[in-house]
Length: 106
Image 1 (cartoon, helix red, strand yellow):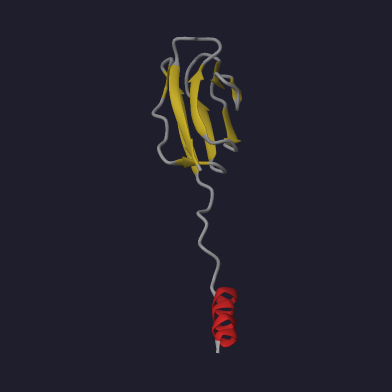
Image 2: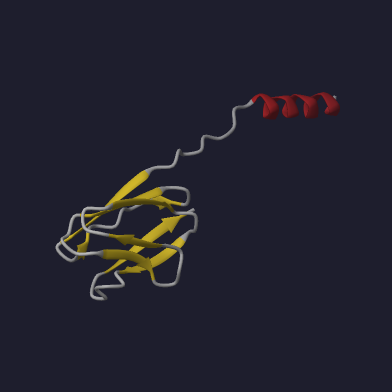
């Protein structure tokens, strides 16, 4: 009797669909007028960040403690994949007054 119950439970586990995994999303951050635009909320590891420089000057989006360093000429766009979780202090290497914080969840 117990063996049948275990076998039935095992069969249910095998036949159940796997849990849904959220597909990676693309978030956009616009740099304009010497400022980072709003940092996106709910960024998860595996998501993409699309950095767009709409300013007249060259900028970077550089994680102070490492993780990413995006160099953008005026009018340029680059996309990165966030592979690490954590809170990233973001600055521009050319304009240290430009600061933001990007949070990446698991």
